[in-house]
Image 1 (cartoon, rainbow, N blue to C red):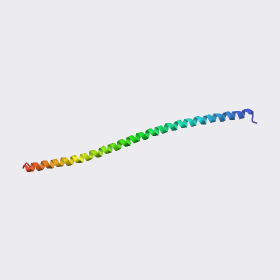
Image 2 (spheres, one colour):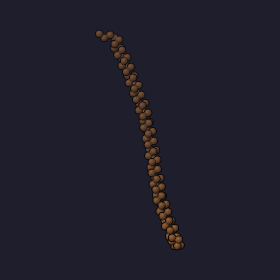
Image 3 (cartoon, one colour):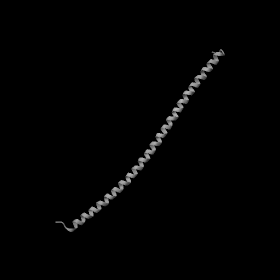
Image 4 (tube, rainbow, N blue to C red):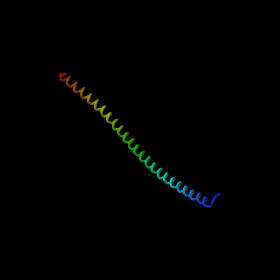
Length: 91
């Protein structure tokens, strides 16, 4: 048969489990906030790297354009020099 203490022990266990559940929920909330902060930090880091990639790609494109212009200028100078030497009878 049930004695009076068994009901009391069950109530104590229920209260203890409720406290445990509350602590677990609190810990889960703290961990969730920590994860959200970490994810936010990672997103910022990714955005910075994406921005830097775009910046470097733009710089690379500008350098390629300048390189192409310089090559054309060099060809023009070389042709002008060759034509100049031809006119002077050197070539």
